[in-house]
Amino acid sequence: MGQRKKQHGPSYATHKAFYDAVRKSNWSLVFIENVTEYQEQLAQQELGKPWCILSCRLDPRVLGMGCARARVFMVAYRTDKLVWDAPFGLNELVECLRGRVVMTAKDYYYMDLPRERNLADYNSESRKLQFPDLNQYAKNGRGRGETVDNALPTLTTTSGRLFSQAHHRFLHPDEMLASHALPISKDQGKACRAPTLELDKVPYTSKVHMAGNAINIPTIGSVMLAAALAFQPVQKP
Image 1: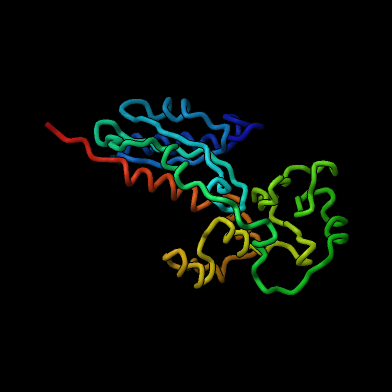
Image 2 (image 1 turned 90 degrees about the vertical axis):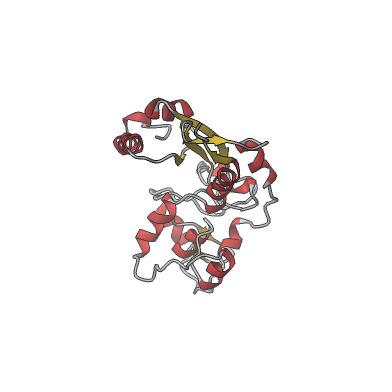
């Protein structure tokens, strides 16, 4: 559902199947995440009545995380089962959670790992692939990963190799996943009060793809928090 292929991409069939499953289910509440170009009208068209859509466009940096991952988040609910019973809207609650970014991209290199090949070797090997690195600026013609606030560029399945000159190595897949606030280590799990993900047997490349497809936990978490605070069941007469 991106800008290039839009409804003509292979993922659109999965998109249609998802909404078919929702309509056939007995669910009363569904959270939807997609690229920022995705329009609420499309979701409403697919779901129809009695579904109602609330939405907000949100980036982790709004919540204080130095990681670029702008997405649209939608709360779809059945108006015959749930009512939004709160003195605030979805965007208003998210605005209350706004925080100041305290981490730069380089701060995500937290693991104590050996140094790898230097940036010259990296550029030589990856020139055709155009992987972004942490020294990437628009003037060199490779602006996809550039962030003006030095936040971590958006991770995609094809941009996993981020090189830091300060650390002389690439970003590790576990660090990529941690940038989404996923509990990778025991310390992170304790801080998040969540089980630690068991990824020891997951291949390196699979982790990169997982990170490239992952949403950021604080963004969807804030949307789910708003829903938990605001929704009440419809009272039957």
